[in-house]
Amino acid sequence: MPTVLITGASRGIGLEFVRQYRADGWDVIATCRTPENAPELQATGAEVHGLDVTDEAALAGMGRTLAGRTIDVLINNAGIYPLKGPQGAFGAIPVEPWMEALRTNIIAPWKVAETFIGNLERADRPVLATVSSKMGSIAEASSPGSVVYRTSKTGVNMVVKGLSIELASRGVICLALHPGWVRTDMGGPNGLIDATESVTGLRAVIAGASTADSGTFRGYDGATIPW
Ligand code: NDP
View 1 (spheres, rainbow, N blue to C red):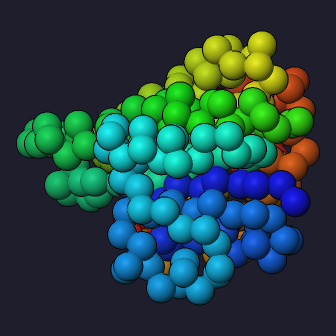
View 2 (cartoon, rainbow, N blue to C red):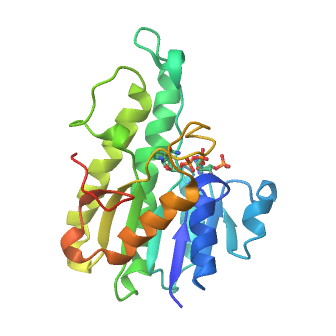
């Protein structure tokens, strides 16, 4: 059975990825910051590792732990959305939460790719999928606010494009994915779809992608999203 590694798997979209791949019989390596606080993840029977994706030393340690194992699909899912609403409005945005968003949403996906490239290379059709957001699309931006989150997702889109170029010769299919507006802790109760629908669609995009799709930005319905 193929193996998938998913970051930020304690809840929301990440947890749903774990559940669906497990249901299909995949070997699932799930990471989250505090496994002891993630009973729903533990209940899936996935192999769980503690990992803060912004912690370079912890990432390196996990790279050593997983050395020699094949990873067919790697999902950069962990993400944060600081300063929602008025706190993130023009005029008084604090710098440190912005830096934390850049560390978590942009830099960590790149570092995760660097850490597990050797595992991906062992797969026949390796896919590196990064959960971005339409909120990061410059072409589609029209409303004010959320500049902290928006810039972090715009930045990770370039990370995905950059990785697609860097890793083309190694056969790694790199995708930026928009999960839709999903009812999770981050998306809130007014989201348009639930995690089941989102992840069902995202998994279909991942399963159907070829090297020709590497470096593209796709929605959970498979549609191409303008950068
Ligand atoms: P949630 O807030 O429900 O879950 C976020 C997950 O990321 C949690 O498991 C959290 O872990 C983890 N996480 C955050 N920071 C770190 C870190 N430094 N190291 C490891 N794990 C971390 O969000 P969603 O499930 O909704 O979002 C998942 C992804 O989808 C994110 O990248 C988000 O930006 C993106 N997205 C979501 C949308 C939505 O409508 N929900 C829309 C567009 C994009 P912990 O439990 O430890 O906090």
